[in-house]
Image (cartoon, rainbow, N blue to C red; front, side, top):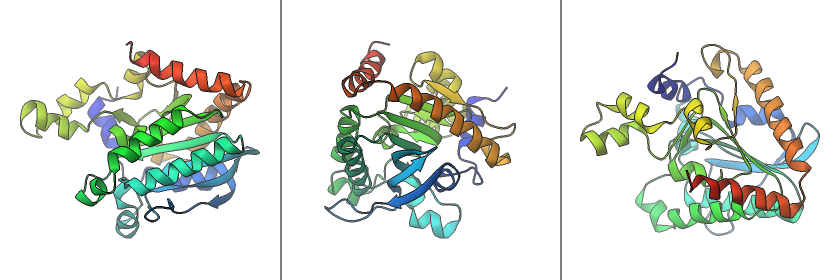
Length: 263
């Protein structure tokens, strides 16, 4: 049985498929949208119009990069506020044209630098949550690797939150939690268990809606199988949501998150 700390290591595995891989295998006719019409174009949050199994959709995702060059380009998966504002543009576009939103979460957290804070990091994340919660079109978020705190929820306030079997989703990283609770970072393994951050923990708590199975050894051991599994689960949930009226879709999402406050 995989421990919580082992799950964290699998979620961070350097060969684990990232958002650009999901774009390649799951989507066709991808047309990217760039910029936030305010400051610039963040390369951590990517997105645009695409087709998923024949459905016209808006797709949004956080990209980490696969090597030194691309990791620097994508800021190691830590979005700046202009990335969240780009995501907001995309979500509003989806609502305007009644297109489902499919987001893919993979971030250790939003970028904590002083420049990001000066440009309104917290406000941008909060606005992303607010716009996501207010959509009248289906919204499915899939946690594919790390789901770190507000950096994740900024594009994850969805009708359905799906999660790869060996991903994690948490208010704080185990290392940071260890530093706060135990005054050092040597108890990260213990903190990971306490945080209840695995897919199995979170589905019991009602935080996520469905687990996407991974091949034995992790998603990186068989990327095609991982993609096939993701396609099937996302399509099933999308078909369920497409049956809802716009008003019911909105109510379904709000009820989901209001229920979490009562846990």
